[in-house]
Each structure stands twice: as C-alpha cells, then as structure tokens.
Amino acid sequence: MNTLTQMLVSDRPLIMGVLNVTPDSFSDGGQYATTDQAIQHVNRLIVEGADMLDIGGESTRPGSQPVSLEEELSRVIPVIEFAVHKRIPVSIDTSKPAVMRAAIRAGADLVNDVNALQAPGALEAIAENSAMVCLMHMQGTPETMQNTPHYSDVVTEVQAFLAQRIDAARNAGIPAERILIDPGFGFGKTLEHNLTLLQQLDRLLALGCPILVGLSRKSMLGAITGNTVDSRLHASVAAALLAVIKGAKIVRVHDVKATRDALSVLEAVI
Ligand code: 7PJ
Image (tube, rainbow, N blue to C red; front, side):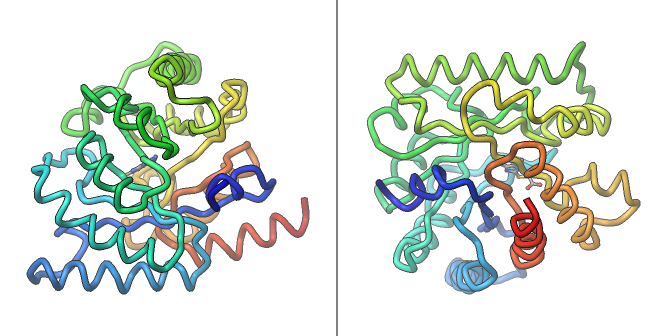
C-alpha cells in the first residue's frame, strides 16, 4: 500500500495543496525560473502541512486556452520529480493521456482529470497503471462553461454523470478503490448550482468513492463575500470546513496552513 492509499483509509480529512506551474501564476522569467519558483512552492506547501500536492501545467480556469503537450510536460515533470524526491504524494492535474503516463512514470500517485477520463486513450492510461484517479464533473468546456450553465436538478445530474464515469472506469479495468469523485465546483455552474451542490454534497457519498472538492478562492466565494481573488482566504477556509463536514475526504486548497489549522479544530471536536 502506498502512502496515499493509507491516508485514504484513515478517517482524517486530507489537504491537497495546489501548485499551478503556469506562466500566469508566476512573475516573468524563463523556464528555469518558473521551475525554480514552483520547487520553492513545493517546499512551502509541505511545511504548511499539505498531505499531497496537485501539480498542473495547464490552466483550467474559465476562458483559459489549451497548451501543447511539450509545454505541459516541460512545466510539470521537473516539479513532480522534485516533489517525489521530497516524499510527498503527487497528483497530476491533466486531461492529456500522454501527460498522465509521463507523470505516473515520474512518480505521480493520482491523476486529477477535470475531464473525467473522457479524452481518447485516457481510461487506458489509468487502467494500465496503478495510479488513482479523480473523476470530476464539468458542464461544457473551460472556454465556454460559464456562459449559460443549465440543469433541471444539479445534484441528480452531477451524480448521474459521476456514476456513468465510474462505470466507464471500472469497465476499462480500473478498480473502484482507485477512484475519487468531485462535483467540480465552478465548472459550468452558477452560484446557485454551487450552493446546492455544497448543501447536498453528502448525496454523492452514495456513489461509494471518496469525495474531493475544490472551492479554494473560487468566484462563488467572491460572489458571496464581494472579495477579489486575493482576499478570499477566510471564505475559502470556511468552505473547506463545510465541505469536510458534508462528507468531503480531500480538500484542494491554495492556502494550506490556514486550512490545516481549521481542520485541526474540527478534528479535535468531532
Ligand atoms: C478544481 C480542479 C476542482 C479538481 C481546478 C481553480 C480552478 N480539480 N482544478 N477539482 N479546480 N479535482 O482552482 O480555481 O474543483 S482549477
């Protein structure tokens, strides 16, 4: 059993620290400078108490543009290698099968795919390895998803999609123990959809897979508080705490230290 599998069977909520190795996340500089800064951030997230790191080289924010395979690999692989060397479990945030394979070869334990393994060859890339996978719900594509999100019943529809993707993964040979699910907050959802999903997050527990959520700094928190993205720390911590109370096993966050403190208080009480 690897450390990630061991952590998942414990009853403790887990913190996934976000590490975006994307040009817009860092100040200007060449490839070495970017990798260097990313590596410094790995160290910081570890010190702050992250249980695992989610390393991504392609932005999936609303309106973002795709990047080439070569560019994505050159951004993430050196950082994954460094994190593996530091012995922290690594998640690769990608939808590309070639990046999944290369990241797993470099030591990644988990593939975080906002496209839920729907790209051609993605199911096979996971099935032929022993890495875990997070299947996330999204309505539309990152370019257009926030234009006109529509559901007749958001929780039922997200649940049905995730059930269908779990079936597809299992039919491809990925055992259920290797699957995590995520409702995909902000991915083709209005504020009301996001709030309904958070209120009823526990309904997704019926699917039988651990739930991962990403609420950190998201625009729904800006809509609630009126705060810009750089002032959403407190709202993000509140949202992470609520998600854990509602059944989330893993919270994907930018602010690891603050989230760690909040979850320590929760764990001391429950
Ligand atoms: C999520 C993600 C999320 C998972 C992003 C952002 C947008 N992966 N990648 N779940 N969000 N699994 O962090 O604002 O919610 S990128």
